[in-house]
Image 1 (cartoon, rainbow, N blue to C red):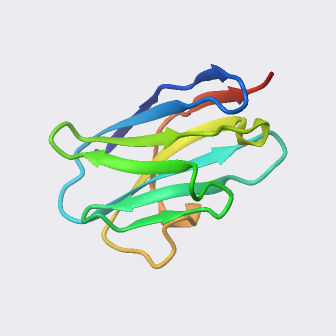
Image 2 (image 1 turned 45 degrees about the horizontal axis):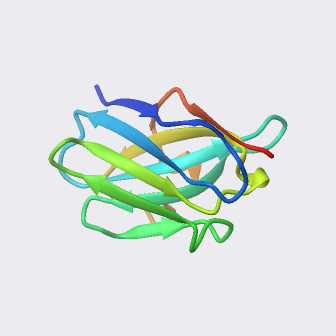
Length: 123
């Protein structure tokens, strides 16, 4: 059973940074791990995704500000979020899927999810 646990959320001011962590287990072979976010009343939005072998994908709204990376030795995927804006406020989820996908930011492609961690950006 794949298990995902997010951490690192919190409250920051605009322009500050946060790093989210997604610890995963029982993912072998080829897989994608992605970060999604959701605010009340809105659909879940794909933010960033990383394949086993380095390929990454980012939403236009976070390009140049967010970076997804992987610590393979410790089974952790990070989301470094810089220059945070109030509109980045959301519940952030980590998700995973085995194999490949042409749509790594599409939530329907993922079948394993964490519980989420809250990020609040406010002055």
